[in-house]
Amino acid sequence: MEFIAEPLQFIGFSLRTFGHSVILIFIALLLGIPVGWQRGKGVDSIGLRTFPIVSMASCGFVILAKGVSISNGDPSIIGSTMQGMLSGIGFIGGGMILKEKGDIQGIVTAASIWNTAAIGMCIGFGRVEISLMLCIVNFLTLVLLTPLSNKGYLDPKGGLFKETNPKGKLSDKEDEAI
Image: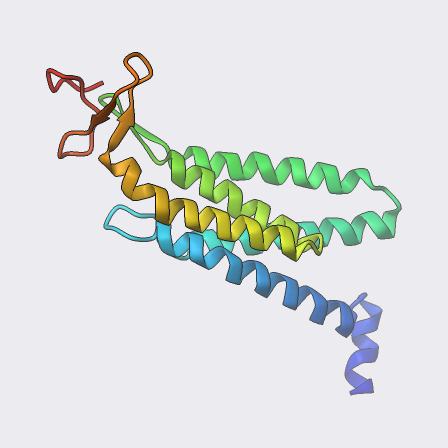
């Protein structure tokens, strides 16, 4: 094993660091799956794979930023990396939001993508407990509140719960799209 490790040391490879990074990235991947599974249902979904990949990639960026920040002695690298990641994730999430004839869809999916990025970032910083809570709360929110959300919405003017029409579009009393 020494003959393999020695050349790899030359390029800065550490088996211990590699093992630690693999574990963190795998945990981030696993914690992205429940949210992706819930959002991946249905014909028009973005699928199960997107959320775990966002979580895993976010973790990888944080691990990289931490390593570069430590080796360069510049803590601002972490902030800059996170800022860039969040902008990129916002762009991906923004692509999920669609508006058609007063009907807006994809906001919950966009927010869930944002959350899976936070899950990965927390894992990258070694805060598994925060990422676990983000995963659980996001998943339970989707599972428990989606049926209620599908029934209608609360009208801010009248304070009444109005049902959506069968097509899933919000409508007023005259069945006009809102």
